[in-house]
Image (tube, rainbow, N blue to C red; front, side, top):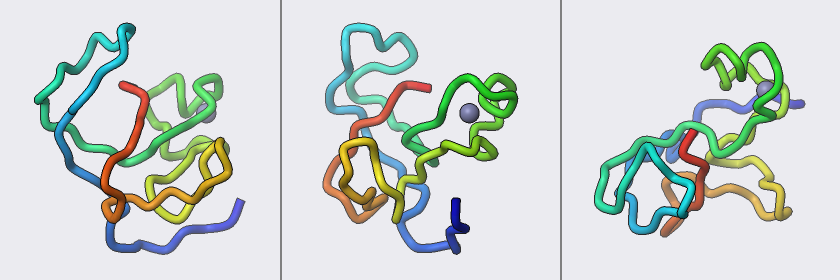
Length: 84
Ligand SMILES: [Zn+2]
């Protein structure tokens, strides 16, 4: 995996506008911060709340999400993220 230099829009603050039925940590209207949009959930960093060191992490900006589209961080109008 290549390195990612600091860029505007990398860490995002927003408001929850919709939550899935399995979401327990947040409700609609909560203000949340997002630094990553994905990780493997199975490695040592993921299991010790250090997901930023996961080799399979997905940054909020300038990374490629599972669906093949680039993440746009704070420049996007909305984002879908896991409650973790
Ligand atoms: Zn991981």
